[in-house]
Image (cartoon, rainbow, N blue to C red; front, side, top):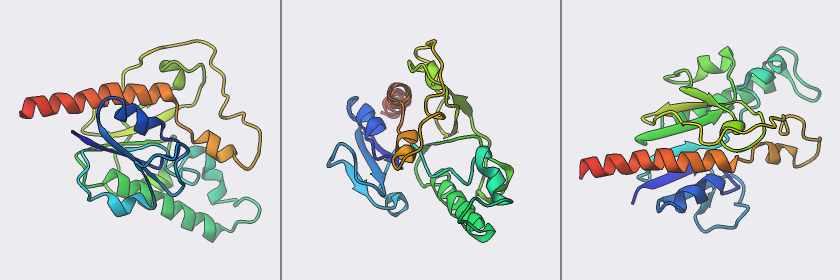
Length: 209
């Protein structure tokens, strides 16, 4: 049974999609899991990267300082922040991405928005994303462009293209849980990952046998 680690996920959406298909799937996040699963590890995922995983999916790593939409804050920090703090947060975000991208795991997928050049320069062995996907390609009538960095995995194929493409996530009202809801994964994309990447893993196992 292939072992799948879903990093930076508290919702369990991707973990459950793989578990439903027979994989030994675990999630890991600094937060406890919403579903209180015993297959969720609370802590820094970097502490368990050497534990014999077959696939790593980084569902939503901290991206505020890496993405293009936030690059302006590096030169003009938001209220309550300094330029030094912005630089430290950028370096911390890039270090986490680097550790995930270079993890000692055969098959890796890292999800993140479009990245700015300053972040790219800090990431070890940086490569451009293999593709970008939208929720409306997988059954959700919404827009939220997401890039996928893939190592030894095929690009995802759309499963259900739908209309009604609203920017719900972008237009969420301010509030204490806004960041949490914005980072919640789309089930349709999780199902595609489990079907397509899980199927790819199974085909490799059959070929090796």
